[in-house]
Image 1 (cartoon, one colour):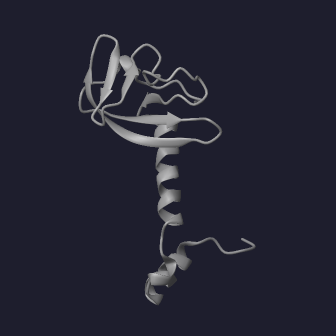
Image 2 (image 1 turned 45 degrees about the vertical axis):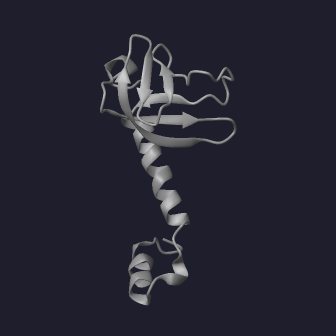
Length: 114
């Protein structure tokens, strides 16, 4: 991550949104909700637990593929939203759309040579 968040992991509270990142040659970002914060852990509603000290997923000792949790701010939030939008576009069943909808999408696309 290239930025220093304006809030830190220690600033998170139950109910806050955070972003998890999984590496290992590919990056998968997920949005999670914090269930509770203990003295040493961040516990997510999905049951995942992360160390409060460094944000690493508890139980995974591989530095390169271990999930990391970040506050949902700035660059990491922008990267998550971009990934989600790209995934949505890739999964559209274009053949199922009517011509008016397709025309509206085409109108939004940049023209070649511009």
